[in-house]
Each structure stands twice: as C-alpha cells, then as structure tokens.
Image (tube, rainbow, N blue to C red; front, side, top):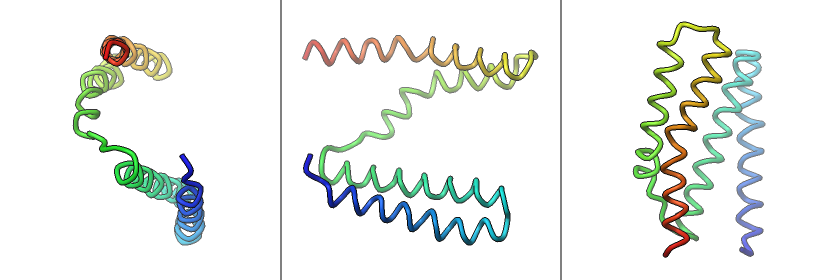
Length: 116
C-alpha cells in the first residue's frame, strides 16, 4: 500500500519497546520478566496496527468481531475447565470444539462476501 514509512516507524517502536521494557523487567524478574516484556511488546504492536488500520484503511468493528467468537471461545473454555481428562487431550478437544462452533459462522461470512 506504499506505507513503508509507517511500517518502519512501527518496527522501530516495537524494537525500542521490546529492548527497554525487556531490559527493565528481565533484570528484575528473570524469565517471568522476559515473558511479561514480550506480552507488553505484543500489546504495543497490536495497538499500533489497530490505530494505523483505523486511520488509514477502514474502521474495525472490534465489538462485533469479539462477539462473533464469544460462543466458540466459551465452549472451548468449558471443555478446558470441566472435562476431567488428560490436559493435552483436553486442549485438543477444546480446539476441536472451538473450530466446530466457529466454522459455520466463518463459512457463512465468506459466502456473504462472495455474493455481494
């Protein structure tokens, strides 16, 4: 899209955030600080992408998007919490349930976009 400068600014902000927050948190908390610094850097990255996309491309209807995945996420969470089987099997089952619940809605969305 010809947005090389925007992408470069985002990369610079991401690197600086990762280095500065990582330096502070890793020196204080070790491995947990490293995980926390990656989480902070990922959130900063997501906020930048969200902001630039809304500003330059189109509005994102985040509430609608979150509500569209809520039933599948809730079903997967129920599987993770309530089914008394091996944790790895529970995770696989939860992923399958998530896919099974969310797939029909994605299929409908793609069909609507092809029609219009």
